[in-house]
Image (cartoon, rainbow, N blue to C red; front, top):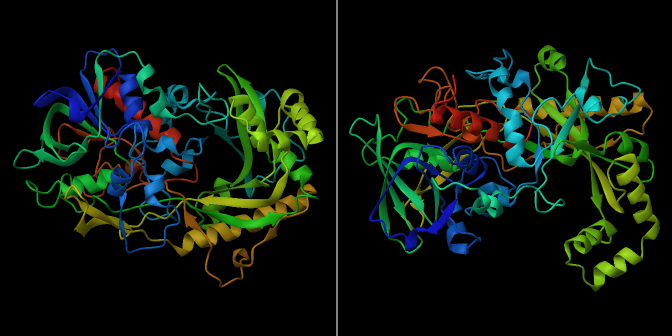
Length: 531
């Protein structure tokens, strides 16, 4: 891939067969999938190779809804590689149930099902540094790991074993896949990336049915015109809706917004600590519900074992999809971070002293990793029980345009993110079930926080997880969504959207694996090879 800076591009008017707006996991997956195809592909990235304060300021928002704990200047990365610059690497696909229309979840249901996404998960795994793309979250994990299932078995009436997989960067086994670092390694004479290229407006024909041009501003404030036969908007869960709404010079209500749906149904994952375990008495529970190292066709990969609500109890009690896991919080002098620095060649005197002070822990860790194939024993500050719950889709939870503008003259996004009592009730019920299940399995149960108790009237201590979702949702009916089942904007012949903003519901799983699978699927459609 050729990577240039828009400021140095000599073309007075740039053209392409396909223009991708955004170089995060969705955008760069599309570009990589279309490498060496017959299409001339142009990728536009608002940032550069490094973060800069001026570019980060373009992420500022006006927040008028629920408090958001994740700072948007940190979580929304305007840099080559997008959100992969800071993501944690935890991956899992959505469940079958997440795609279904559920009577107890208002506005639920995708126009496609899991069976239409599943074929693309293994190809997505290759982009994300995963060993498997599908089939690892439930009972089949034990077969893939060549292990006997854990006993005694979890009571499946209430809970199900659940596994997440951790992304691994091909150049650094201790880090998650960073897309930007590897963009230049992809052999693709037909793909060009332009950095410091911020799209400020999407121009359409008079009736808004076709994109004619993109107005793009470089970091010096100069505006250029880009024309492409087809455009994919892959700028992130908030920016996708913001740019559609802000492109209102020709179509006053914004592109794809004839039915006032752009920006609505904004979701995130609500997460938080729901309880604590004693590091001295929870070793057995942490051994079972901890990390496992599995040899796959792509090398060794790490999996995390947790618990999720069963589909049956969700239906019977009107609950949302929710998962919980044990989170070990290492102390400041945990030696394993120092060992990682040593293996990376970055070790300092502090690291050397820390390593030398914990020979027993390191020896135990070598055995666990090399022989037992489990997670490393850490020197712990404390042990938490954490949860992640999906949200109830709500048309009043939305992104609009603020009256204030950024330095490029674009309106800031006005975020009215709303939460629901159904989410709080789900977390309280799930935490109680996990505590009871730990006791039934013979483990000391976690001490649940006071607000988590089902009889508590304290406010839920849950925050967003920087997974903005749903604001350009997928639908069969243009009156209830923004894109169709092929991710093409309703009523706009050559504009597509990639990323979590097309999700009608968000399940409990981290969104990146599904984002990338849908990007692979879209690439096939744009190439013309998909049925």
